[in-house]
Length: 60
Image (cartoon, rainbow, N blue to C red; front, side, top):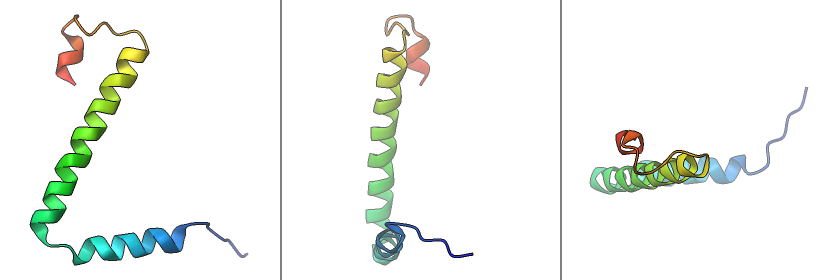
């Protein structure tokens, strides 16, 4: 069986580059990525009918 994945080599190169970054840079990138994910999750929740003023959305 022969499987080919498109883009896998690029992903592996990016992971290797991340491993070379200093710890404080990794930490900062992780925090920014988490903040972005949180905002996108809130947007999707609101797009599916949750009222932003209900208080439920504030727990995200």
